[in-house]
Image (tube, rainbow, N blue to C red; front, side, top):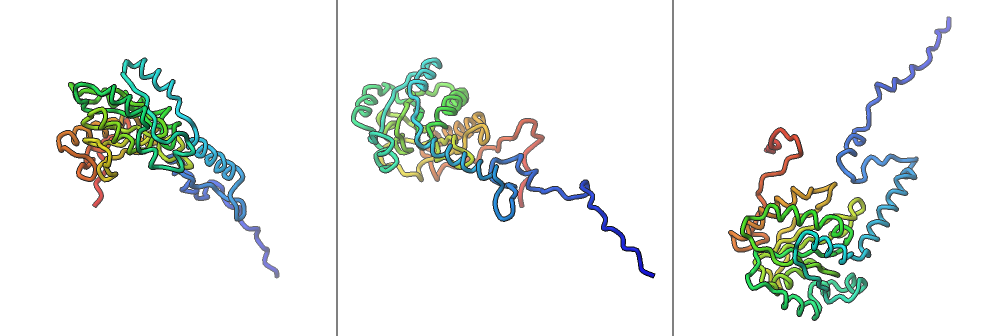
Length: 272
């Protein structure tokens, strides 16, 4: 007698284990859990990558709308000055980083005429960098958040709006304005998931020739990264520390308490 062959049991969809990477996508814009079609990525993932690449390229070449920035500074009641690096245009800026680190002659004369009688405790520079898009979107809100947290009595110098600027341009700007500290708010090199990331660079006693080891950096300031409030808290902590220590950079550590998300119940657990 032949045994009756049973049909294979159908898999229970509810019992299938969910892909754990899908849950992690809620916490990052990084390219994870893209899926695949055969040996290739799905069409929507390929198209999204192409769009992100185009957005990053556009951010590098986008010009800073200086008029809109200065109008916003006027509305906030902040004195300002516009300067330009020695790079005459974007092509020279991208090919000659050294030109982006020094002012042109007209800007030097303008800052010399603008120098306050009393040395400012801090001068803020709003600079295009490699993403004017980031500067356009985030520099003013961050500046306002930082101003609210500065110690009472601190003198803020005129806000400088800089075109075709590299980070080190702040050294010459701060030196010519006699600033005790300079803070560069500058567009960072765009990534494929972050074409509008703003960076903050703090230099104590700025002067031409300072090295990157003599600065402190706070990066990834944007709604999907470090919030304006969190970045402003860290910046003012470092400004206070640099003023007390008399220097910035590798000698100045950011050991401020880690910021908690809204509704956090307490500090994160310590790793051992």
